Image (cartoon, rainbow, N blue to C red; front, side, top):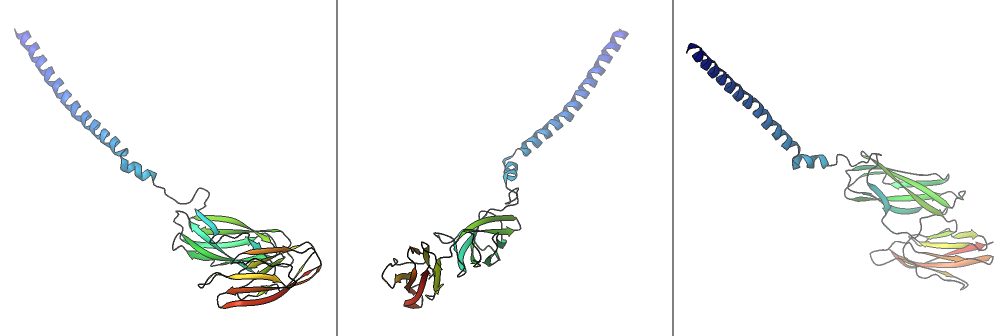
Length: 262
């Protein structure tokens, strides 16, 4: 009986030890499993995913920013002539960027062509800003196309645009005060002369200009601001004409000029 009692006692002790070890193991591994599930759920939450999708920069990998260079008015042609500096209004637009302060520069690859910009730098107050561009051409320039590259730079990068101006040495410009530039134009037989009205519209109405030749050989339709009219000359001679114009501060102003064809 003694041996049997000792065996029963040993079994009871072993059962107690196994039970204690099982409780300890359940407590330790159960806590770790719960913590791991919580961590996984947090990392895939919608808030974390939304944060990762937000853009961190408005600049592209090439360092360019989303700005566009264009015109506030639609021109039939971008013209340039030696007789006068022609002025255009361009716009620099920001397209969903954070570009604020912008610096501008302009350069022509054709010697004898100079370009001015005003202002040369600005801070965006809205979606776009207007900039005045003036292009002057030396009489020695003969290239038919005058490319001008305009670059806009900001802290976020830069963008550029190339504008192609057409050289027209047979261009007569009607200026704000009715003055004609040049008043005397020399052309070759068969050459076409173009008149450009640069009298801007006033609060009282649109600007108007009419070209009429003294010999009755030709007359233009009524030209509004930025309108052009052309005539070819096939016979040598001296052609006198008058331009009657209406604009802000004057009405019915007449200027005389000549075209010499040789």
